[in-house]
Image (tube, rainbow, N blue to C red):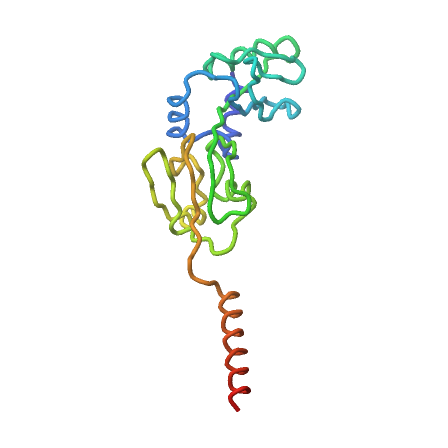
Length: 209
């Protein structure tokens, strides 16, 4: 158990463990795994095994070394115990941490809008990076988080500066994050507009004269 304690402490330092509130929310949202769900598996000193895995249509995980592992219908703790049992035949005292993942959709002023798998430990900047970065005219101060029929407006700039994670700000499975675009021209567009106006005025004066 000492090895597991060191693993948990290390993961907490690097920010890979879900904040308590987010972990509770994720657990409440899905008490057992279903086909199509995705999990992050982390094993102490086993880089080839640590990674993200999706449960197949048959309800099984395809894991390195041990192959097919039944996952559908199991809780986080039960699946963790199952993985430990499978890997114990090959690895002495395997230390495993399992983190459920969930989908978040990001739309608006981003280059690659769509749905992405997250664990809640990612920073706001990570979600934006997944979506290809910000597009033009992004107004992050008025970012909207839509959850069902509820819309929450947040200042994402403050979250970026503070290094907040998605779990810190309460992002949940199925949420839609919308980064609005400004309706006003940016500086580059103003330069084009002004140069066009100046050219038009110059042509008008030349014709008039």
